[in-house]
Amino acid sequence: MKVDTPAEWPTTADEAIAVQDALRPLVIAADPRPARFRTIAGVDSAYDDETGIVATAVVVLDSDTLEPVESAVAHGTVTFPYVPGLLSFRELPTTLAALEKLDTTPDLLICDGQGLAHPRRFGLACHVGILTDTPTIGVAKTPWGDYRPPDPERGSASDITMDGQLVGRALRTQRAIKPVFVSVGHLIDLDTACAQVLALTPRYRQPETTRQADHLCRRALRAATA
Image (spheres, helix red, strand yellow):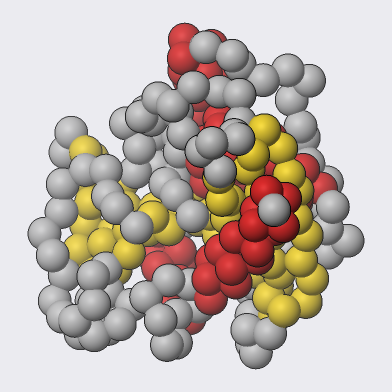
Protein backbone atom coordinates (compact mmCIF):
# COMPACT_ATOMS: atom_id res chain seq x y z
CA MET A 1 0.00 0.00 0.00
CA LYS A 2 1.31 3.44 -0.88
CA VAL A 3 1.95 5.62 2.17
CA ASP A 4 3.26 9.18 2.34
CA THR A 5 5.55 8.70 5.34
CA PRO A 6 7.05 11.95 6.69
CA ALA A 7 10.83 12.30 6.48
CA GLU A 8 10.87 13.41 10.13
CA TRP A 9 8.51 13.04 13.08
CA PRO A 10 7.87 15.76 15.67
CA THR A 11 9.63 15.33 18.97
CA THR A 12 7.78 17.94 21.05
CA ALA A 13 4.14 18.78 21.70
CA ASP A 14 4.47 22.15 19.96
CA GLU A 15 5.88 20.52 16.83
CA ALA A 16 3.10 17.91 16.82
CA ILE A 17 0.38 20.55 17.21
CA ALA A 18 1.89 22.47 14.32
CA VAL A 19 1.64 19.34 12.15
CA GLN A 20 -2.01 18.87 13.08
CA ASP A 21 -2.78 22.51 12.36
CA ALA A 22 -1.06 22.32 8.97
CA LEU A 23 -2.80 19.13 7.84
CA ARG A 24 -6.28 19.76 9.27
CA PRO A 25 -7.47 21.90 6.31
CA LEU A 26 -6.77 18.96 3.98
CA VAL A 27 -9.42 16.73 5.59
CA ILE A 28 -12.41 16.06 3.33
CA ALA A 29 -15.48 15.17 5.42
CA ALA A 30 -17.44 13.92 2.43
CA ASP A 31 -17.48 10.92 0.12
CA PRO A 32 -16.19 12.00 -3.31
CA ARG A 33 -15.56 8.38 -4.38
CA PRO A 34 -18.00 5.54 -5.09
CA ALA A 35 -19.24 4.27 -1.72
CA ARG A 36 -18.57 0.60 -2.50
CA PHE A 37 -15.94 -0.69 -0.13
CA ARG A 38 -14.87 -4.19 -1.18
CA THR A 39 -11.98 -4.44 1.25
CA ILE A 40 -11.85 -2.81 4.68
CA ALA A 41 -8.80 -2.71 6.93
CA GLY A 42 -8.58 -2.30 10.68
CA VAL A 43 -5.51 -0.85 12.41
CA ASP A 44 -4.66 -1.20 16.10
CA SER A 45 -1.58 -0.93 18.33
CA ALA A 46 -0.43 -2.51 21.58
CA TYR A 47 2.28 -1.12 23.89
CA ASP A 48 4.61 -2.47 26.53
CA ASP A 49 4.98 0.36 29.04
CA GLU A 50 8.13 -1.08 30.59
CA THR A 51 10.16 -1.41 27.39
CA GLY A 52 8.40 1.15 25.18
CA ILE A 53 7.93 -1.45 22.46
CA VAL A 54 4.85 -0.99 20.28
CA ALA A 55 3.34 -3.51 17.87
CA THR A 56 0.87 -2.33 15.25
CA ALA A 57 -1.28 -4.70 13.22
CA VAL A 58 -3.42 -4.14 10.15
CA VAL A 59 -5.99 -6.71 9.05
CA VAL A 60 -7.79 -6.46 5.71
CA LEU A 61 -11.25 -8.06 5.48
CA ASP A 62 -13.57 -8.81 2.60
CA SER A 63 -16.52 -6.48 3.25
CA ASP A 64 -19.12 -9.06 2.22
CA THR A 65 -17.88 -12.05 4.21
CA LEU A 66 -15.76 -10.29 6.88
CA GLU A 67 -13.13 -12.93 6.20
CA PRO A 68 -9.42 -11.95 6.30
CA VAL A 69 -7.76 -11.10 3.00
CA GLU A 70 -4.33 -10.01 4.25
CA SER A 71 -2.56 -8.84 7.40
CA ALA A 72 0.70 -7.19 8.38
CA VAL A 73 2.53 -6.26 11.57
CA ALA A 74 5.17 -3.64 12.35
CA HIS A 75 7.19 -3.13 15.53
CA GLY A 76 8.84 -0.03 16.92
CA THR A 77 9.74 1.88 20.05
CA VAL A 78 7.62 4.72 21.38
CA THR A 79 9.64 7.93 21.59
CA PHE A 80 6.95 10.63 21.66
CA PRO A 81 5.79 11.70 25.16
CA TYR A 82 2.31 10.99 26.46
CA VAL A 83 0.24 14.12 25.76
CA PRO A 84 -3.59 14.04 25.60
CA GLY A 85 -4.73 15.01 22.12
CA LEU A 86 -1.39 13.94 20.62
CA LEU A 87 -1.56 10.21 21.27
CA SER A 88 -1.56 9.44 17.54
CA PHE A 89 2.09 10.49 17.31
CA ARG A 90 3.01 7.58 19.58
CA GLU A 91 1.76 5.01 17.08
CA LEU A 92 1.75 6.73 13.69
CA PRO A 93 5.24 5.52 12.69
CA THR A 94 4.40 1.85 13.21
CA THR A 95 0.88 2.31 11.83
CA LEU A 96 2.26 3.60 8.54
CA ALA A 97 4.96 0.93 8.51
CA ALA A 98 2.34 -1.81 8.87
CA LEU A 99 0.14 -0.32 6.14
CA GLU A 100 3.12 -0.02 3.81
CA LYS A 101 3.69 -3.77 4.06
CA LEU A 102 0.29 -4.54 2.54
CA ASP A 103 0.07 -5.85 -1.01
CA THR A 104 -3.64 -5.00 -0.92
CA THR A 105 -4.74 -1.37 -1.00
CA PRO A 106 -7.90 -1.34 1.16
CA ASP A 107 -10.91 0.68 0.04
CA LEU A 108 -11.55 1.84 3.62
CA LEU A 109 -9.50 2.09 6.82
CA ILE A 110 -10.89 1.83 10.35
CA CYS A 111 -8.73 3.32 13.11
CA ASP A 112 -9.10 2.54 16.79
CA GLY A 113 -9.26 6.19 17.79
CA GLN A 114 -10.69 9.56 16.91
CA GLY A 115 -11.13 11.40 13.63
CA LEU A 116 -12.75 14.84 13.70
CA ALA A 117 -14.03 14.23 17.25
CA HIS A 118 -10.79 15.61 18.62
CA PRO A 119 -9.83 18.85 20.40
CA ARG A 120 -8.08 20.13 17.27
CA ARG A 121 -10.39 18.23 14.89
CA PHE A 122 -7.47 16.07 13.77
CA GLY A 123 -7.27 12.70 15.45
CA LEU A 124 -5.44 9.55 14.36
CA ALA A 125 -8.00 8.66 11.67
CA CYS A 126 -7.62 12.07 10.01
CA HIS A 127 -3.84 11.81 10.02
CA VAL A 128 -3.80 8.29 8.61
CA GLY A 129 -6.37 9.21 5.96
CA ILE A 130 -4.35 12.19 4.77
CA LEU A 131 -1.06 10.25 4.61
CA THR A 132 -2.62 7.32 2.72
CA ASP A 133 -5.17 9.25 0.62
CA THR A 134 -7.74 6.63 1.64
CA PRO A 135 -11.26 6.88 3.11
CA THR A 136 -10.78 6.54 6.85
CA ILE A 137 -13.05 6.32 9.90
CA GLY A 138 -12.25 6.78 13.57
CA VAL A 139 -14.07 4.39 15.91
CA ALA A 140 -13.21 5.16 19.52
CA LYS A 141 -14.12 3.45 22.77
CA THR A 142 -14.41 6.74 24.66
CA PRO A 143 -15.66 10.13 23.44
CA TRP A 144 -14.36 13.64 23.11
CA GLY A 145 -17.27 16.10 23.16
CA ASP A 146 -20.86 16.25 24.32
CA TYR A 147 -23.55 13.70 23.51
CA ARG A 148 -26.65 12.09 24.95
CA PRO A 149 -26.79 8.30 25.25
CA PRO A 150 -28.47 6.81 22.17
CA ASP A 151 -31.56 4.63 22.52
CA PRO A 152 -30.81 1.03 23.55
CA GLU A 153 -31.63 -0.58 20.18
CA ARG A 154 -28.87 -1.58 17.77
CA GLY A 155 -28.35 1.15 15.17
CA SER A 156 -29.50 3.98 17.44
CA ALA A 157 -27.25 7.02 17.35
CA SER A 158 -26.86 10.49 18.81
CA ASP A 159 -24.72 13.42 17.71
CA ILE A 160 -21.41 14.29 19.33
CA THR A 161 -20.70 18.01 19.40
CA MET A 162 -17.76 20.17 20.44
CA ASP A 163 -18.25 23.92 20.81
CA GLY A 164 -21.62 23.52 19.11
CA GLN A 165 -20.10 21.79 16.07
CA LEU A 166 -21.10 18.28 14.94
CA VAL A 167 -17.96 16.11 15.09
CA GLY A 168 -19.26 12.54 15.29
CA ARG A 169 -21.90 10.15 16.56
CA ALA A 170 -22.36 7.81 19.47
CA LEU A 171 -23.52 4.61 17.76
CA ARG A 172 -25.15 1.63 19.47
CA THR A 173 -23.76 -1.41 17.65
CA GLN A 174 -25.39 -3.99 19.95
CA ARG A 175 -28.59 -3.72 21.93
CA ALA A 176 -28.12 -2.21 25.41
CA ILE A 177 -24.33 -2.30 25.06
CA LYS A 178 -22.18 0.81 25.51
CA PRO A 179 -21.95 2.69 22.19
CA VAL A 180 -18.87 3.28 20.11
CA PHE A 181 -17.92 6.79 19.02
CA VAL A 182 -17.68 7.27 15.27
CA SER A 183 -16.12 10.23 13.50
CA VAL A 184 -14.92 11.03 10.01
CA GLY A 185 -11.24 10.62 9.33
CA HIS A 186 -10.99 11.52 5.65
CA LEU A 187 -12.81 11.08 2.32
CA ILE A 188 -16.08 9.86 3.82
CA ASP A 189 -19.23 11.41 5.28
CA LEU A 190 -20.59 10.70 8.74
CA ASP A 191 -23.72 8.86 7.57
CA THR A 192 -21.67 6.50 5.41
CA ALA A 193 -19.17 6.03 8.21
CA CYS A 194 -21.88 4.97 10.66
CA ALA A 195 -23.44 2.61 8.11
CA GLN A 196 -20.08 0.94 7.52
CA VAL A 197 -19.45 0.55 11.24
CA LEU A 198 -22.84 -1.11 11.71
CA ALA A 199 -22.08 -3.50 8.85
CA LEU A 200 -18.81 -4.42 10.57
CA THR A 201 -20.44 -5.17 13.94
CA PRO A 202 -22.86 -8.06 13.35
CA ARG A 203 -22.10 -9.70 16.72
CA TYR A 204 -19.83 -7.54 18.84
CA ARG A 205 -19.54 -3.94 20.03
CA GLN A 206 -16.31 -3.23 18.15
CA PRO A 207 -15.95 -3.50 14.34
CA GLU A 208 -14.65 -6.87 13.22
CA THR A 209 -11.69 -5.08 11.64
CA THR A 210 -10.66 -3.61 14.99
CA ARG A 211 -11.24 -6.87 16.87
CA GLN A 212 -9.00 -8.84 14.54
CA ALA A 213 -6.29 -6.16 14.45
CA ASP A 214 -6.40 -5.98 18.26
CA HIS A 215 -5.88 -9.74 18.61
CA LEU A 216 -3.02 -9.72 16.12
CA CYS A 217 -1.13 -6.75 17.62
CA ARG A 218 -1.40 -8.21 21.11
CA ARG A 219 0.04 -11.51 19.91
CA ALA A 220 2.81 -9.65 18.11
CA LEU A 221 3.64 -7.64 21.24
CA ARG A 222 3.79 -10.77 23.39
CA ALA A 223 6.17 -12.36 20.91
CA ALA A 224 8.35 -9.24 20.76
CA THR A 225 8.66 -8.96 24.55
CA ALA A 226 8.99 -12.67 25.36
